[in-house]
Length: 195
Image (cartoon, rainbow, N blue to C red; front, side):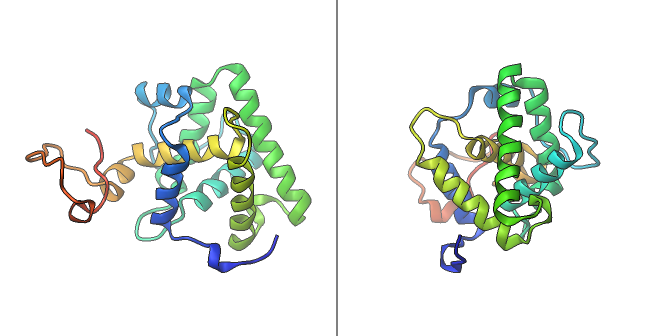
């Protein structure tokens, strides 16, 4: 794995690319969980399903996907707790097992390659490793659901269903004004949150 800072992207570009990667294909249990009212909420989190190590990896990985900048990081708005709730309460037993196996495989691959735990690595190491895992997942055969893509989807759903994600990152207007379907995106600014 070589260090190439030219491949780094800012948060807004990462969100845009993640949206394109998802391309409207969202894992059905994730939509079901959101429709059932699952949302990220900040606060203390005591893992129920995840081991302590898994919880630390989930927190570190969520923060690599959505780090803090002018808005809070994923862990600050409760995304790791959201991910555990979704996996524990919405996923079937088979889906839960597949997610946990993927999480352990991700951690094990990092440990083998970097010789450290994922949550102990430097930001650069975690970013590079995650970037290459994502690239490999994107190149897999269509229809497969690699762990990293499922995790990214959960992270994005958790973040943008949180109060911070819906009001500080997305534009939010409880009672929007007139509808203009031909307004250039540059005039709108951020994407609109749904009400």
